[in-house]
Image 1 (cartoon, rainbow, N blue to C red):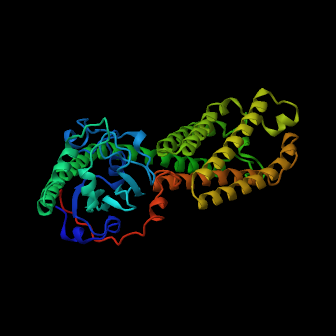
Image 2: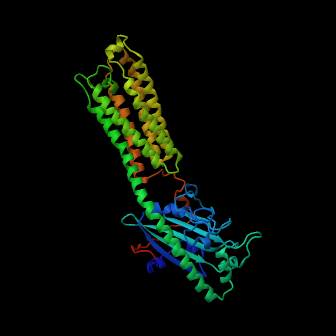
Image 3: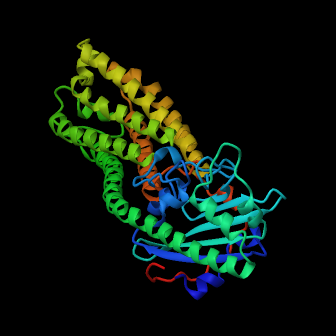
Length: 441
C-alpha cells in the first residue's frame, strides 16, 4: 500500500476533482529509472497497449502489450487514451511531464471532471522508481456509470460492473468501488513493474553502448588535436605549414599519420552511430548522425588523396591526387558546416548560440587560410597558414566534444516533443514529499 505520507501528499488531480465521491492512492517501487518506466505509461489505453491489468475486464479481452510500442509514445495535452475499447472521449490527457507525471481525466459534460487519474514517477537512489497513482471520482461519475452505451455497442465487463455499482446505496457503492479499484490498480501497477524490469536490463546495456559510442566522439577529437599540434618532422613549422603537409607524399610523418588516421576514422564513425542511437524520435539528431557518418566515410578516401610537398607543386609536379585532395577538403568543410547547422537547430538556445559562434570563427579563419593558400602552391612564405588552419580544425573538434557531452547528459535532444514545458504551463508543480523506498503496494 501507499505510505501515509504519499496519501497526504498533494497531487494535481486534487484540484481537478476537489470534492470526490471516493479517492485512492496506490504505489509500487520498480527496479528501473523513470526514463525506462515512462514508455509503458505513455502507451496505455484500450486499442493501444492496454492497461496491464485484468484484460478481460477493462480491455475487452485483448491482451495488454508486453513490449514498447513506438507508435504510441508521443502524447500531448488533449490526446485521448481510450478508457475502454471504442471510447473517444476519455481518458483525456490533461497534462504531461515526461518522464515524471501524467494526468488523465474523464470530462463530466458540465465543464468539470467526473474522474481524474494521475501517475507520478519519483526517482529513487540506485536507479529505481517509486510509481504513485492517485484516482479521484466525483458524484458525476455515477451519471456516467448509469448511462446507456451508444446504440450498436454492447457494454464490456467493467461497464456492467459500474452500472451495477451505480444502483447501490452510497455507502455500499463507495465500499465496493474502493475494493474493486484496489484490485484492478494493484494488477495495473504490478503489470507495469513486471514489464519494466526486463526492459531495464536491456536498456542498461543499450545505455552503456550509447555512452561508449558518444565517448568515441570525445576521444576522436582529442586524438586529432594531438595529431595536428604534436606531430612534426625536422624543419616542419606548425605555424606556417598546414597539417596536410604532414601527410604529403614523401613526408617522414606520412606513415604515422596514416595509421592514426584510420583510428580517427573508426572513432568518428562510432560517434556517428552514437548520435543515431541518441536520437530517439528526433529526426534532426538522426540527420546529424548521418552527416557525421558521411564525414567519417571520407577517411576511407584520404589515403588516396595525399598532396605533394610544396617544392613538387611549385615545379609543376602535381597529379590527380592533389586535385582529389582539394575536392575532399571542400566536401569535408561542407559536411562540417551542415553538421553544425543541423546540430544548432536540434538543440536548445545555448547550444545554438555556441554553434553560431563556432561558424563565425570557422568563416573568419577559413578566409584567412584561403588568402594564404595560393602562396603554398608556388612555395612562397605562408607565415600563419598553419596556425589559421589549426584553429579552424580545433574549433570544430571542440564543437564535437561539446555535442557529445550534451548528449551524454541528456540522452536526446532537448527539443524532444515530450518536452515538460507543456505540463508546467498548465499546472504549478506540486510540492514533492520525501519518497519512500519500500516495496510494492
